View: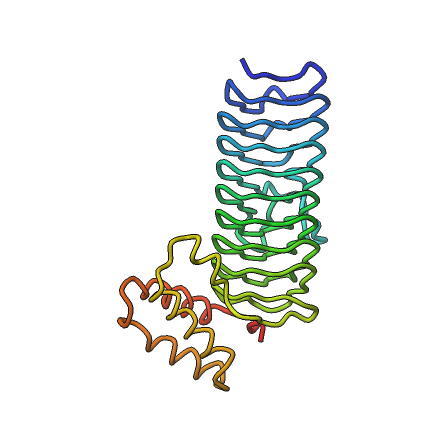
Length: 262
């Protein structure tokens, strides 16, 4: 049977795997599903149409699956989907999506999410990300895999952060952050690329050198945005395994709607 503390309130319609742990005074609503190996700390509220995968650890005092903080929301049955093996620390708030977007806020796998992090409606968070204390993601924000968001950072609605990027402490992000880049400040500015993170993830010297070249084209060579995009596309076929990185960057730049941090 599920290991549920006697003071917890779990709706009879909720679906919990047999080994899920639920701490004291936690409340779990009727449309919640929680996978095997997950644990929910004390004094949490998990509500809405929320799906939580396997082996997640949600610490005390979290609010998961609440209605979006959107004045247009009219009670539609939108969703929150959380993947596997995520660590979600104290006082985090994750909201469901809205019908103005995909209708679902999504969290991938293996994320390390520190205390007081807010994920607003329709946020799309990838996998293997680190969100430090008090990082705040507004509605419709998209975050790629392996991203690091520094503490007390605020991310404006509809901003996109590319895979392997990093935003430093107290960054104010109102424009998109291309993959691999490092930004910080208010307003945010680019300060190189995430070379140490790439090394830790097994990127070889030639791939890293090509990513450095993409950084130069975007930020150091005095090119217009369109000129930089064209020259980045021209890097295809030059480095073994590097076309994946070029495609990632080219696709991101083509999809950017808010302009990039410069």
